[in-house]
Image 1 (cartoon, rainbow, N blue to C red):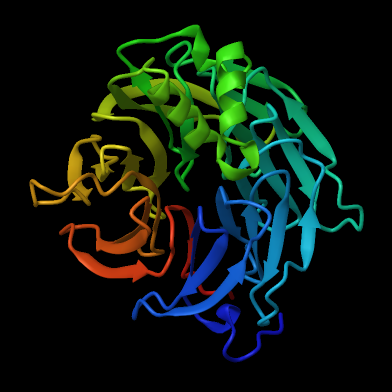
Image 2: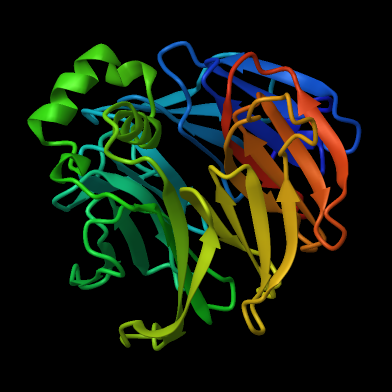
Length: 373
C-alpha cells in the first residue's frame, strides 16, 4: 500500500467525524487539530467506517455510499455505490476488505463485492422493518441485523439461513455489537412509557410527517425519534441493553445465543453499544447525554461519561450518538449533537481532548489506531 506523506492514511491514528453539516472531518487525535475536510454534498452522513487496510473511508448517506481515499488529498469520492432507495444507516467491512455490508431504512441488508468492477450489490437480505444497525460476527460469516420492529436477525452468509430473536416486541433495536472474542453480543433499544402503532414508518401518520422532513435531509433514527416526540406518542423513553453469551459459530456450527443479562442502561433512548478491543468493557451511548462504560466481568457500571451542563440555566447539550474505543481500550471517542467529538480516559472519565469545527450535530465517527503488519 502506497501512503503519501502528509495524508490522513500516513498518520498512525485516523479519526474521522461526520453528521448533519455535510462534511467529513479528519483530526489529529492527540492535538485536536482538523487536518482535512471533505464535502459530502448529497446528504448528511449517517455512518462512517475505515477499510481494514486503512486506504479508504466509507461514508453512508441517503441512497449511496461514498468512498474517500485516505492516501491522497483528493477531495472527491473515488468510488460511489448507489442503487439504494432510502437512507443507509450502517456500513462495515469484511476483515480482509473483500466485501462491504450495509443496512438501511429500505428494510434491506446488502453485501457489496469490493473486488468487482460492477458497483451493484451482490446479495440482499430483506426484513419487514427499516434497519438501524448491522454488525459482522468475528467469524466473518454471520451478520447481525437490528430493525425498528424490535427484531434481531442472524443472517448466515454461508447457508443464507437466518434466525430471529425479539428482546422486546415493537421496541426498536438501535444498535448491536459482538465483542472481538465472540463471547458476548449486546444490543440496545429505545423503549417508552407509551407505545403506538405509529412507531412503524409504514403508517400513514409517519408518512405524512415525513413529508415535512425530506428523507434526504434526516437520518433514519433521527427522523424516527423526531416523529415520535413531535406527535407526543413518547413523552419519556429509556434505553435497555441486552447481553447474550455466544456459543458455536465455528466451522459449520451456527451461533447460539444464551440470554445473559438485561441492563436498564439509560433514562432516555439508547443509541449505540460497542465492546472494547480487549473485550473487557461495553460502552452504551444515549439521548440522556451520557456514554456509560460497563465491565463485562459482571456488567456493572465502571464509568459514566457525561456532557450534561453543571449550569442550571444551560439547556441540554444534546445526545451522545456514538463512540469508538482506542486499540488499547484505555480511551474512547464520542460523537454528540452539540457539534463536538471528545476523547475521554476510560478509567477516570476525564476529557482529554475536544474536536470542534462541525457546524451541526456530529452523529457518527470512525477511529483506527491499529498498526498494520
